Structure formats: C-alpha cells, structure tokens
Image (cartoon, rainbow, N blue to C red; front, side, top):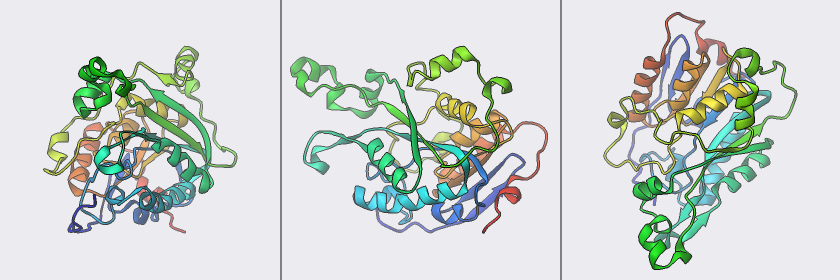
Amino acid sequence: MVAPLNEEYKKRTVEHDKWTAMLGDSVERLGEIGDESIDLSIYSPPFADLYVYSSSPRDLGNSRNWSEFFDHYKYIIREMLRVTKEGRVTCVHTSDIPALKQNDGYIGLKDFPGRVIEAYEREGWIFYGRAVIGKNPQSQAIRTHSKGLLFVQLEKDSVWSRPALLDQILIFRKPGDNAVPITPVENGDMDRDTWIEWASGIWTDINETEVLQHGHNHGRASDDEKHICPLQLETIERCVKLYSNPGEVVLSPFAGIGSEGYVAVKNNRRAILIELKESYFEELLKNMRAADAEGGVPTLFEWAKQVT
C-alpha cells in the first residue's frame, strides 16, 4: 500500500576525504556523477512493494505493484550502467519475497531476484553470477513470523513448511574490457584457499547478526518496517575485496545508514553514497565519520562529478 505522499524533498551533499554522501533522489543525484567514474557498486534496493520506507513519492518502496516498481527502477539501472567503468561490476542484494494471502491472494514466494535479472539485462548489463547466503530458519521465523518456518506448522501439517528465505547477491558486469585489473591476491585481500570457499557460490559462514548497528535505532522513524534481509557487513566486504582495488570508488545508490560505504572506507576504498530518507542520511553521516581513518586523500566528489 502506498503511504501518504507528504514528505518534503530535500537535497544535501557532505564531502569528506574518503567519501561523499548525497541526500536526495537516486535518479537525480546519479546524474551528478560522471560517465564511467565508478569502479564498483554494491547495494540493496527496496524489495518492490514489500515495505514502505518513507512517504516520499520518489521512494521506490512506494510503488503500488511490481509493474510500477520496475518501471521506475529501470532509470536507476540505466544510470548505474552509465557511471560504471567498462568491464566492472555491480553487486545487487536481493531475496525471494513472500506472497501474502491478504495482498496476493495466496501464500507462497515471488521471484524478485529473477525479475531484477531481467530488468538488468534489458538495460544492457550482463548477468555474471550469483552468491547465495545461508540463513538460520529459527532466527528468521522469530523475526518474520512466517508460517512456513514455524515448529507448530511443521508438527500440524508440514505441507506448508518451506526453507528459509536466502539472501542472493546478483553480480552484473558492464560490457567492455576492464582497463585496470583487480588483483585481490596481490593486494592482500584474499588468498587461493579463501577463493575456493567464496567461489562455491554458497556462503554458509556469513554472520547474520553482523550488520551496521552504530546509532541505527536513532535513524528509525516510528513508521519504519524492519528490513526482511538486512545486508551483513561480511557480505559487503567480500564484494569489495573481490571486485575492487584499494583506492577505488564504491557506489551505493540506496545507502540507508551507510553499510556499504562503511565497509568500503574500512577497506581503504572511497565511497559515494546516495540516500533519500533524511533520518537514515543523518545516521549514515555518523557511521561514515566513525569509519574514517587518519590521513587525507584527494576530495572524491570533485574527482567524480564530471557531468556530461
């Protein structure tokens, strides 16, 4: 259901040595970033019409249905293709979405990752890989109260039981040749044994509770919904180490409270973060300042905002 559209639209830019934070609409603010200036992007988009995150008409979470969501989302995907360097990738955090009796007329699952893949391919991206993250079904049952995960349902009629919803990191590559090789072994970000574990495509060792907590409660407005699949810091770190070099630029167009930027800066990358919701943006600033290391680097925003 769409929330009342009564939220004032605000824009703001905060520049720091290693990161730039941009308050505002992702489509609009992505337009301020230069062509092929981004080395890697990592983000978790709103999960279609599952939750309402704000009352802004610019919020993708305010879509009436999947058709409206993907009609708007395509503009983000196009802009991401424009700003990404040739041959580089974007990592998109998704999950299947529950179908609810009161909203959808049935109880089941909807293939949100599949629709995201289709949307990306339509805009010219190459679908390149997928990592699946194991989840604890009991923890998920406590958080979501899903009928399919409850012991009582298992014991009453297990035909309604199902596996836990698993996070999926979808990897898309921009066509073209990568001009600067990414060398994680040489950089000291990983070794061959680590690669064997990560290349399995099933990440069972991710700590579900290791999500950005610093000041998070202060960023939640009274009408916020809890995200069904919060993006863990370990997951972000793997994407950063696999698909970027130290000193390169990591973008998140749906930055929330800054998890992707926090991990990027902690791993000696730079970050550009875009967030629409002002309360999240304020927490993002606190988290990014906490991640700052000593010493300065050239201001990022001036380097990357070559508008064409």
